[in-house]
Image (cartoon, rainbow, N blue to C red; front, side, top):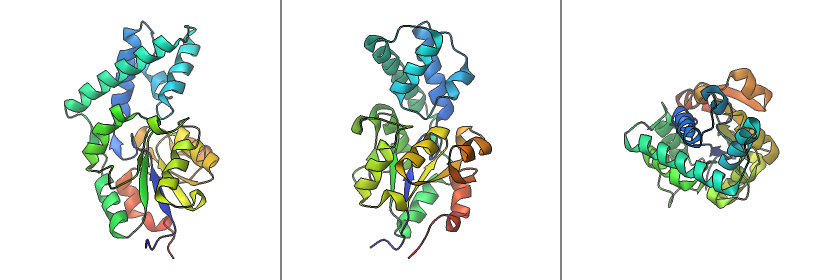
Length: 227
C-alpha cells in the first residue's frame, strides 16, 4: 500500500526528458517542407499542447487551409524529424529525472506519465528514462480523445493508478500542463526546464515552480503529502 496520499502525474517532454527544442526543430522542419514560413519562437510557444491543436492554431495564424491531409503530412514529417534526432542520441533525461522516479518508487509514492505526444515520438523518450510501460502507467495522445490543455491525459493517468485526481500533482513544464491541471482539479507544479518562465507558469496555475527534476527532488517534501 503506498504510504503517500499524493500521486505524481508527469508530463514527458521538457519535464522528465530534455526534448523541447528537438520538438521545436522537428516542427520547424515539417512546416518548412509544407512551405509554411514560421519563426522558431512562435513554434516554441505552442509546444506542450496537443499536436493536432498545435498545427491547427499555427495554420490558422498563417492563413493556410486546414485539411486532414495537410495535418497528417505535418504530423508524419514531425515524427520523422524528431525520431531522427532521437536516433542520433540527442534525447536525454533531464538532470535528476531518473533519480526522482526511483525515489518515488522506493517511497511507495504512485506516479505515471501523461504526454500529449503519440507513442511514435514518446517511445524514444520513455526508453531514455528506462521506464517500462508494462510496469508504469504511460498515457499518450493515442489513448485519449483530447490532449492538453484539456485534462483528459491526466484524468486517464490518475484512473490508471487508481487514485483521486484531486489528490494528485501534475508536474509539467508548460502553461498547457498547468491549464490542464486546473481543469482536472489537480495541483500543478511547474518546472523551468521547458523554457517557460516562472511567472507564466504561476499565472497559469502552478502553486510551486522548480528548476528541473533534480530541484524538485531536493524539495519534494514541500509537495508530497504523506499519511
